[in-house]
Amino acid sequence: MEMKEFHYQDGLRVSLFNLDHKAVPYHFHNEVSDMMYCSRGQITIELPDTDEVFTVHPDQVFQVPHPSKHRFVNGAPVGTPSRYVLLQIGDFDINFVPAAKDIAGRFAERTATPVTGHAVHIEDRKSDIIKLADHFEQERPEVLDAEEQADVVAALRCFASRGLETAHPRSGRNS
Picture 1 (cartoon, rainbow, N blue to C red):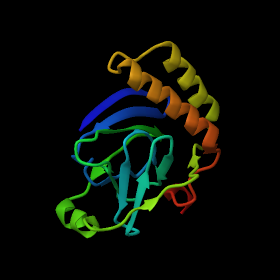
Picture 2 (tube, rainbow, N blue to C red):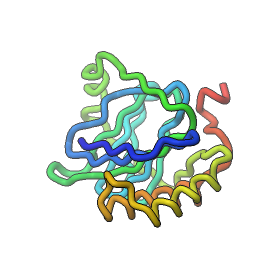
Picture 3 (spheres, rainbow, N blue to C red):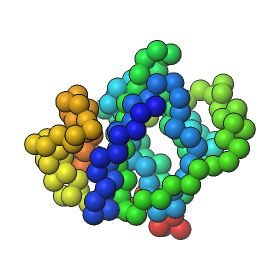
C-alpha cells in the first residue's frame, strides 16, 4: 500500500492511495468522514459496525460517515493494483481499531454490495473543492505522477458534481 498525502489546508485533506493487496487498517474518525473516489481497479469497503460490505468501481464514489469503523481493501483480482482518492472535510483525526484480525475474519467470505449512483455529503465546501480541482489541474503536487494528478482532478470534480451540500445523515454531527 502506498499513501500520498499532499494537501491539508483550510479543513480539506486530500490523499491518494495505491493499493496492492494489503488493506488500509480498520480505523474510524471522530471529526471527518472519508469520501473516496475509485480511479483504478476495485475497492472493497468493510463497515463492521453495520456488518456491511460495499464494492466501488472506477468513477464511483462512496462516503463513510464518522465515527463508523471501516477499512478499504483492494477488491480487484490478485496482481491488479487499485487506486482511490480520499477527501476529508474538517479537522483530521484517526483512531486505529485493535483486534482487527478478528473483525477481518467476519468479512472473509462475504459478498459485497455494488455501489451505484452514490452521492457524497460535502457540507458547504463545493466551491472550495472546485477551486482545489482547478489548482491541481494547473499545478501537479510533487509527490504525484501525471496519471495520479489526472485522477485527483477527476475525483475532486466528481465530489463537487455529486456532492450534496449537507452533512452526512449518519455522521456524528447529526446525532
